[in-house]
Amino acid sequence: MKIHTLGPETTDSYSAYQYAKIHFPIIKDYQLVLHPSFQDIYSKIARYHGDLFLVPVAYRNSDGTNWTDYNLIYGQQLSIINCFNHPLKQMALVENQSVNNGRAIIHPSTIGILNRELPSVNKDQINFVTSKPLALSTFLQADYQYAIFSYPDFKPYDNDNYRTLKLIVPQMIWCLYQIK
Image (cartoon, rainbow, N blue to C red; front, top):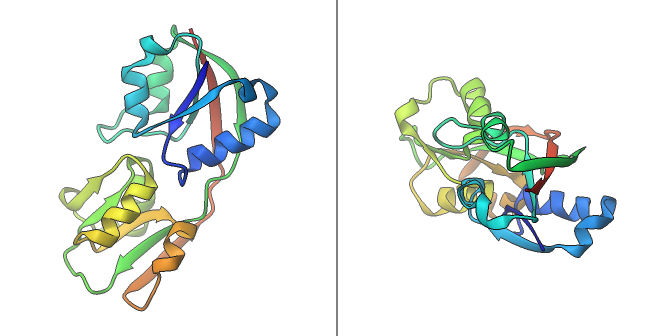
């Protein structure tokens, strides 16, 4: 039996899995499987009969679909075992001061933060990735002016080229499903 969530081990999903493993003893009997996206899990859900699935309720896909949509769409295939509160890592909205192109790289779930803090960013200049660790690595390797990612993962790279525009410490509700 397996428990499915978003990888890699630097994601908030992995941290939530570690928390759940301590607080919900049933999880210890399940082998962890980390996926490249939540969409990957949903698209293969029929294959995972009997497994567990851990997902944050703030999950949003790049096409705008979100946890609420999927909870309703897949409701007949998923049974909620438990919901719990576990914070996300501190997030940062960061500007690369050596780039002036208005481009941003983010996870779709953080679009509200970007829109609130930088309303002037052109929607056509926003690119989405499947995780905040991927947003960080893409930001560091490509030509983006803005990004939102987990700040602890960014600390080793922080220098005078970057300006932290906003730090956020969000709480999160996590949903643990049994896949029928």
